Image 1 (cartoon, helix red, strand yellow):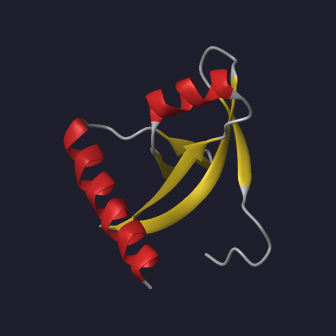
Image 2 (image 1 turned 90 degrees about the vertical axis):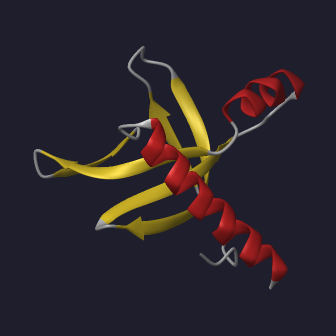
Length: 96
């Protein structure tokens, strides 16, 4: 993704009704499934501690009732596999 136009942000609402602002990092496709990586947005020191608790946030794109939604991953194994792929991709981008 080109940063020519600046970073991309999204706001998600969790199941408790809390809004979470995330900065889009990258996306990848694995076995026909699209995954997206985000970092929590940090506005002050208190938010920075909370952001470090989350680290890289990985969500997958799912279709529900004809609408594309972002969802958490189904298992720790799936999360570990996708996390490793994102880290490889991020590190290779930094080397270029």
